[in-house]
Amino acid sequence: MRSIYPEEQHDPLLPGYSFNRYLVAGKTPIFENGPLDFVIDRPFGMSGYILNMTVEGQGKVFEGEDEFYCNEGDLLLFPPDYAHYYRRSPHSLSWQHRWVYFRPRAYWANWLKWKKTSNGIGQLSLSLNMENKKHIIQEFDQLLNQIDQTYKAGRSTSEDLAINLLERLLIRCFEESSDFLTKKIDPRIQDVCQYLTENLAQERSLEQIARHICLSPSRLAHLFRKETGVNLMRWREDQRISLAKQLLQNPAISIAKIANEVGYEDQFYFSRVFLKRVGISPSLFRKDLAVP
Ligand code: FCB
Image 1: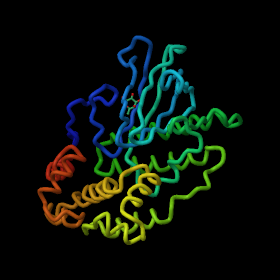
Image 2: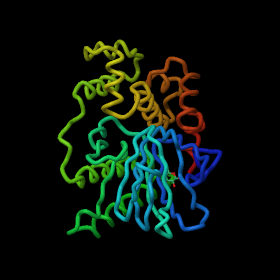
Image 3: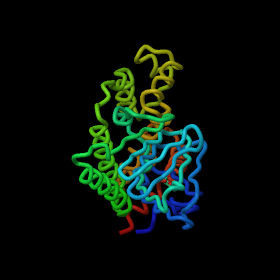
């Protein structure tokens, strides 16, 4: 199957890859003086989360006061817009890590609040679980590998299946963090997510949404971001595009109808948003799904 995501730079391990998808996963094998032996430096972070697990060697994150190291079985969670700055540790000849980049679903918010953080970066050490250390590291390594294989499998459902596995991984991370966070996502935000999901086809302004839960628009925007880590309008757009991708699998529904179903009156505007988010137009996306 031809890739449905033509990108300028095709290798996510090298600078210049666009990451304009819902999920991308991989393994980065860094060896001293090898082709990947450079600093991964994204001062403005990324638009999605990155979960990263060291499977071999040692990595070093940040430089100076904030620096810390990661070893086999250490997981890191970089929220959107947090700076990335990491590389092979100078004390180790190699650093191999698995990672998954993803845009979250709202109901994951609770699993994305890791108990231990350093400068906003979530930290979880599987090697602290002494009794079961080997098995747990293996389980997480396999799960990340499965996510990687699944999203690359080229089926029309590959992304959904990979997201399903990712959900499992996030729940497992949540379980392994020594004591679960008791704080639940704010019920008003849960309510907003439900309201938006039920009204995806309708245009609701921030003011209308805010009125629905008796908050001011600015308070709502702030609270939504705080609770879910993403911008409200952007979150809704993600849900719309996600639904559009599902509907496009049914060739009997016209693109104009899909645009309407997911809340865009103007089919051309919908196509523009889709192109921006997915990397190709809805009609090409549909055509590519049909290629065996
Ligand atoms: C790769 C890096 C990996 C992760 C992903 C998003 O290039 O090797 O650590 O940051 O990008």
